[in-house]
Image 1 (cartoon, helix red, strand yellow):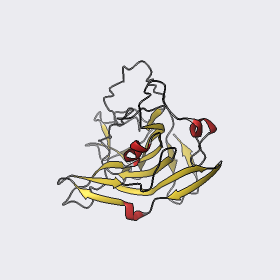
Image 2 (tube, helix red, strand yellow; image 1 turned 180 degrees about the vertical axis):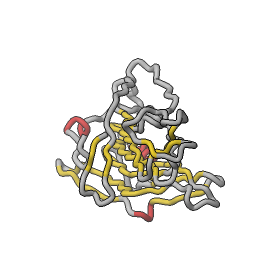
Image 3 (spheres, one colour; image 1 turned 45 degrees about the horizontal axis):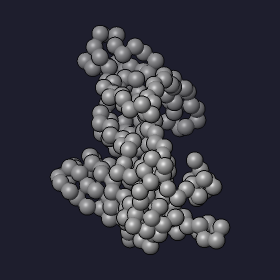
Length: 233
């Protein structure tokens, strides 16, 4: 899926076969989660450093850990939604939950590169309209969480809305749930997470027949301080 250029099939889609009364549909949704580790891998109690190539146990026999300082996560989210009926224009709205400690400035998720674009097909020509920051508001809902409200004005049936944003988080031991399904039909949804092997999570694998979960061993890219070399590990 190339954002900014919906396919011919997406423009021609007027209803969903398995939900004919649906007022809107999510055509595509992807969530990519990646870690960046600026600090070193350390061995608890040994005073030494570990590396990604080592075994999970340090030389002294104690478990290694990743220091929270200098370690962060980035969520890269892309969503493409189409309004099928004029009564479904409310589904153009988007609400995004984020962690925001009211007292600790260092424990707050941050949004980057947020872009919301409305695409309309007028007489065979695609017109693009960017939603301004005036339609994006943040609301604190309690001491620890905030909600970002995105409202898209002047939407009509047939319009396609593309949402893109990145969410930066330094809570390395917590991963937001990914909602594969919504209150409206979802034609395609995926989540990809790249997690350093030294961080171990319990994973609840989906048991829905048309949801596939796979895991592979990848590589971690080590960058030098001056970015003059990159070594895969």
